Image (cartoon, rainbow, N blue to C red; front, side):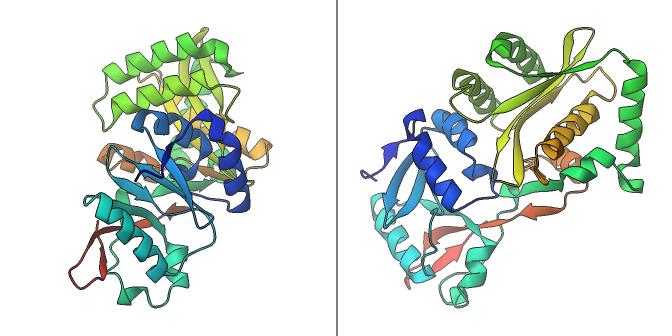
Length: 301
């Protein structure tokens, strides 16, 4: 994998170029995520036949390339080349649209969904209006919050909020036990280190001048906003629902029809929480795991 280079902020314009030409809806292909989470995981990149590949050496993951689609046979050939260098390498983030274009894909692969990598995408309008029985409880909690805390405020985040936000996130982290909690905290710190150089923005919800919740997000494409971090004070009733409402309002006001609230990381509690907001759709993926002896490939969960 010697042709891969470490991804840094100096590659921002390269990323912007590819994602403008080939817009993505997956949070794993969000520029801010690649430069923050990617910094922690030491993600590398290479351009091969005009396609942009990413490689996570910590978990031996080769991302599905950005650019004009290969045929499945061409993609497998490239994967085979890298597999010879790293026998544990997995090709991940294979989208449904690629599978649909390659009608003969079953000649090469057995398709199995990689559900924990699915992004939850919502209509911004739906999270603002909260219509219907299924969202009635969320709407009631927002109303209760507004009645209980009439002097609450919403504030646009800046780099000057770094210490205050990190202290709030550290307190939140101490009370949670989840996958990659250390990685998430480091990605949050990196986001502030790169503030103003990447496209991340944020909102802070305050009660009595203190942080009740915060959210950090960035553009995914022209019509979708992706939320990267969302934390709230468990002791303030309705704070969790209120920050979702405020981010949706921000998205709608700024022309983002869709809001990507990222993945559930295979955590049941987080999965239930994301499903409870009635997603419009999930961004689903497959992965190629190992080469079989007959030179065909299996997509494994």
